[in-house]
Length: 297
Image (cartoon, rainbow, N blue to C red; front, side, top):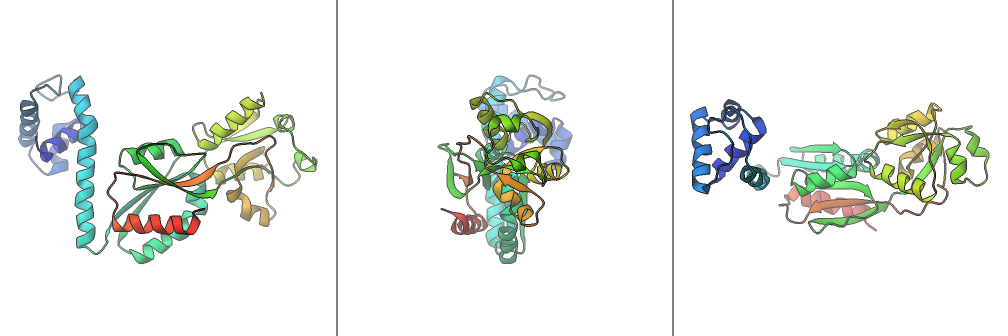
């Protein structure tokens, strides 16, 4: 079993057609078949249900091998990229995953600084809720994650708490709740609510808050992303609960107002996260250092 055999196997599973594997790797289709046959011969087990490979369907052994082979193949590509980075004076690729708030309000100046120092560095920013970002980090698909979360507890991950990321009630100017001296959960339940999408850490925290207060908010719309949420509030579709960091500029401009969430007890923070065993390039180390130096508690 060698690395090329594992690459061919992984691409065969992902692409499902041997001619596509041949095109991807720059080899002939008979060579692809040879590597797949040789891999099964050396391992002594069947990885596929058919010998012809017209239909790529894995056996239980094949599925088990794919779990590790995909990681080995991905990490071998990272090694090649790392060596290119040293050969080409820090040219390379930095992949960052971020939840909406830090991606919009924290990262742009840091990424601009990074590009000035590494002008040939390719930067990929993947903006998603925290759970898929953490999963991609664990699968070695992302270098660093910057996520809004209450805590990060995973033995595979290294995390650094950066800043507090409080949630607040956001109202449009003239909203009826503006006149209330103190809000209560029941008051909020009587007005239309613009909600985060299911699966986001903010939505999960709000759902727990509703359960704790035995409350059901009147969800008029579900929206992905803080900017879209704020726009919905500005157009008087309802109130929202968003990160305080995302509305500071809008408050200064008089577009939105904020109030504390009644009966709120969850502390949410923005964390920098990376895999403990992932190979760190000089660019990754520099970005992590700058990120934690600028924002860390």
